[in-house]
Image (cartoon, rainbow, N blue to C red; front, side, top):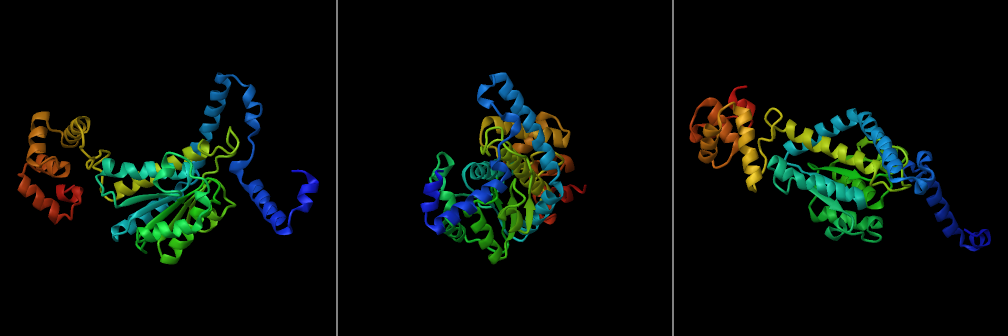
Length: 318
């Protein structure tokens, strides 16, 4: 910026830009990575090798946050057991990662689409294209949470690499006022998202290979964290048997065949017996598994599951 122009700016504008500059200095995600200097002069092989080296740091950064991730899982489980929901909030790449994870719960765990929701700044259009200025509209965050009727039983996960996204911060602050469990996922320990929520998950992945492109390492760390949150939560809630997807959706031929293989592995029975149980249970894998392992009818298996409150291990006496 030209020095004379800077001096002629109104003092309030200069102050605001100064604050923005200092914030940017503190954002590790916005700093330049010394390892990728002269990136534009590298060969394709050099670029991808560099990216691979940098990506190795992500798992280590996430590993350091395991205690916080486990606390978040316990908190989410507790809220869902009380009838609450899990709500992701993000903008841009972070919002799209949230939408991806939320969309995988029903087919993987057989959950209702209402159990997990993802709010992205700018709405549905922002999933496939950039919506200019959406992440700065704090009033939209409050409106979006009011629209889905956020309650104290809900858990909300705010996701922002920089930890400063206004839409996400406003959502976390509103959720705290409502008494909801608040969780933040950020790659900046000095940000509001690291300090505002009850639980902060902060994988410090360092500057990106392409400066400021947080869809890279920061985005990968977010995906890893959400994978842990969703999978561990559902397993703790009994939505798996051993390490098998006992509640997966069976919406096409491939998934129906996968369901039979899962049942075969879980029960130790042959495919003929499995296919018969699947038909008798109307494709309910939980019911079919009880039938196969306890050698009972569908009606008896249904009673056993009801007595066990739907807890599969309990219904099987394991």
